[in-house]
Image (cartoon, rainbow, N blue to C red; front, side, top):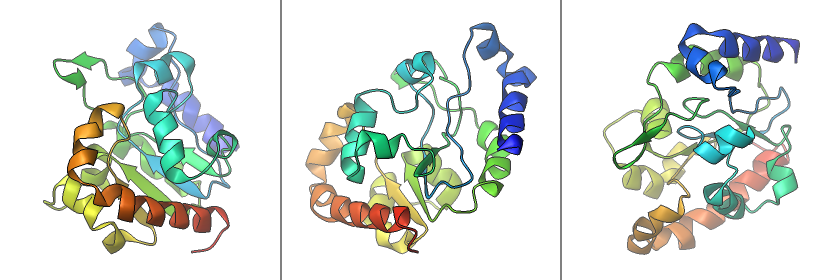
Amino acid sequence: MLELDRIRREITADPSNAWAASAGFEPVYVAHPEARCLIIGQAPGIKAQQSGIPWNDASGRRLIEWLGVDEATFRDPTAFAILPMDFYYPGKGATGDLPPRADFAPAWHPRLLELMPQVGLTLLVGDYAQRYYLGGKSSLTERVRRFRDYLPERFPLVHPSPLNFRWQSRNPWFVSDVLPALRTRVAEALSGRP
């Protein structure tokens, strides 16, 4: 835990994050050496940034439902670590939040991941996380549809934003095929099964 604390201080003190420190923002992520599942999304929303609590919005409530766990389990750092592609709210763009900074995850994820050896399942939520960790030229829809190709270690998911209702209505297989498999794999990972 001492090394994790040291890295958090380094992130806060990094000159590229001075704007956030001057606004009183802390990096929004959760890391624990005993974490069994890891969630990698794009970046915290404004509510998460202001509260310091990841997934502290409607998207988070939906994600918890998708995972088949309760709020207490989701917030238990020995169950779920949360490392967005950027640990700070990136600001508002013309069509939604700005993307995470491209250089952030390469700078900080490897060091944090090395300190979480118990992670048996990584959930890649949204296109930014999937492109970074899975690569290739597949679309988000194809990656999510082919989720079995990435098991047992990784599980690609669409973002649980309520704004994605059109995607979900066009892809009914997500609820019928993906969510039951997701809940099963999460339960296995939390119990320590590979």
